[in-house]
Image (cartoon, rainbow, N blue to C red; front, side, top):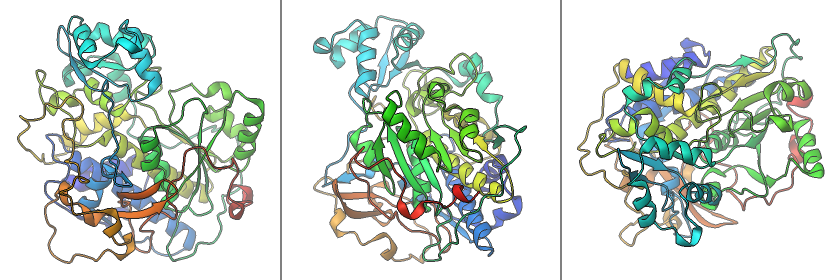
Length: 525
């Protein structure tokens, strides 16, 4: 492993409270040109996947009594998975990952970036700009924003419940009070929900099989997340054997392609927590849950009794993970946020381009990276509970992952994978991959063998080419059609190579746990 790799992985593993002696179980296949950027994105991605795989291997060891399995991280698999949403094909159709109003805009004094992928966010953006849906167009929005200061747009759109962030340099972000709040928190931490409450009995999990080794088997996860980071975390827990049930509100369904990309291994239902029967169904699910993962703004779900303390009161020994863009302290704690906007606020967009021509990371690396860190934290929490820990909570923050990328990884000496960035002017997605599904792409999903059947390449690692990533892609039939998708990058000896089930339509599963999991993990505490 390179020094930069060890440094990034050591930092994340230390933040998770892991045994540093286990880091020797990790090896890496380093590939040049994987996630090329001015900032050390490859090192961040590699480290996030490495600690997730190591946490899975550690839990498998704790449950079997055997040695911790060896972990192998391949830059090619990691780079492909970090743009999984771009590689997804549904019956050959490529998804649209950014709507027309989700982009950079020139303003009177610089740049602003908006996010309007969801219909309600688009409506709020237009309302803040004084536009009716029928009169809105890219050209008209551009005309309005070109006459207004960036910070004014940011504040007014935010006040209307929309999403817009003014472009800042890293120095300007460092002077912002929200930056101070973010920098003051650790990258990750596992904290007792209520240290004064006696810990319940030691968590017991059912015996594990060995083909494949599924360290999270028997664990029930309530998935209250949206977009990318949270769903990537719960998709990873599903890969590792957890029974993951995603719960969405009926009035705010997930974007269909986004749900498909992050829905592997999961089931999906819809519940309105303001409706008495649906709330009763949710509370019944909670009585048997082992993990609750949420991805809404801090405090948004507290009125439904979903604050960590309230959850642990009703379900002692629960693992609670709460993901947010900006954190739960500081003046932006209540603001909405997405990976692309965090890049703009924190100075990443300037680092990857310039103040005159902002750029972007080669992937939504804050989302994907934080997702794997979140999954790692849940796995480490389960391991700690096998040793007697009580309810634990982790609160990963996209902006804190950005701080790690901008400062800690660079300061640790991570080498930069430089390239000419003079041609990154696309305001929608400056680093978009060429469409692999066009007529010139030979990699049709129907021609791909199953994940487990891919041959091992014993040759020296070749540089990564995102246009020829078929060895890290696979295909399957599903209720949604024929899917092409990225293989999971989280691997260890004896572990799973693919998800046990493909995604299905959103909200079509019953709000119940799998019958085979009844009375297992949490019920045996």
